[in-house]
Length: 149
Image (cartoon, rainbow, N blue to C red):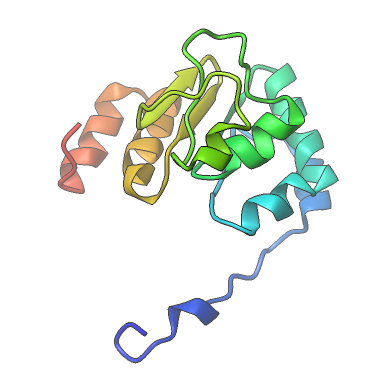
């Protein structure tokens, strides 16, 4: 409960289905983390097709928390050939799913960005913003949010 509001029952209503979204072109596709949500993302064929398209077209995609391991690693979308590796929530079960897990808060591998979890989400978002809009804009947003980069 937060101020008398049960946050566990917050629901979000999508304005398009994943099938509709997968037909569109996107500058960025970012996956949230958490379980069992990451498993649901992993099992969504339209989403996996969309991520494969992002990767093959060199467009930006990213994942945070459990999703780098549960979704991206399980579908061969991590780009593990990069010696820099990728990151995810630092639970042994998730790290075991990845070929080269690293402990960095945020890892950039070409057009893929991964991050560890809730505590690194602002860094993740600012890194995505920097890639899309430049360092100056990301720094401006970080300053306004009182986030040190």
